[in-house]
Amino acid sequence: MVPSLTEIMCQRRHITKRIRKALVTGIAVLALIPTSGAYAADADSTYEGGLLELSRLSDGKKTPSELDQAISEWAEHSGTDKQQILDYELASVTGRIPATTGGSASVTPSSSGGGSTPVGNATAGDYFYTDGGVLNHGHTGIYSSRDMIVEAPGNRQVAHRINAREVRVAHGARVMRVKTSVANRNKAANRSKKYIGRGYNSAFMYGNKDDRGGMNCSQLVWASYWYGAKIDLDTKNNDDIVWPWDLRDSAKAYVVRTVK
Image 1 (tube, one colour):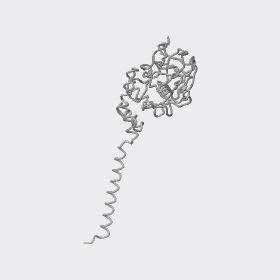
Image 2: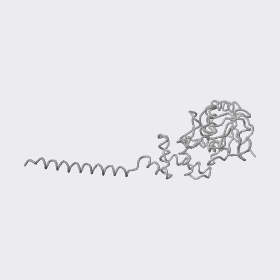
Image 3: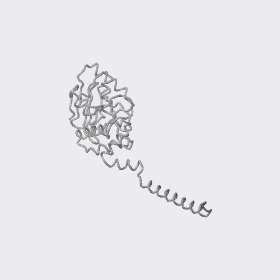
Image 4: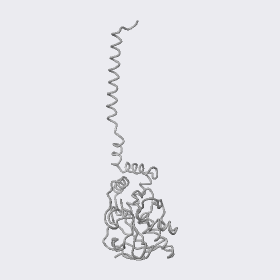
């Protein structure tokens, strides 16, 4: 039996109502699903989630496990909480850490001595290590001559050459000398000058054993010797990160002087 026009119109109205109801329900469900930004916020509130985010920002260079290992080493040497270190690194690589100030290393963990005593003169090719700074990361720089130091001072600053009288360090800081010829030490000193004007590498936890682009403090000293004299100062050499304390503990260098 063929339906009447009235029946057809009723069926259409019924179908239209069902479609509208389905659309409203779908929109309501979508509203309950968090956006990717919300997921990121939830993830960042936990250590594991923060590791995932830091790994994602590395574009595949580092797994969460590798980053945890690096953070654990930093925490062990500095006595700083791992979550605090992770939060700092996330802020650093995303540009949320403000520029450092001052004429020498004085603010950020990768460049801060945090002291008040001038490090003083040494011999070209020597380098210094000092404790202190934000998160007690330590700091290092290399002597390009008797009274001049090349260092990477920190976030949003460029590597510079500065008089040793202006570099302030903590008591107990060490001036180190590499166990090699004067010629090799001079090569490293000369190489360091090539890095003057380089930007800062805030993502050193992704690996810093190269001299491409920006450089952090320990990277600059390490690269000066590696690319200048083919000497690897990271004798621990258990990963692709050279930390300031790796240079302090290098088996290829010895303490010339301790700052009192």
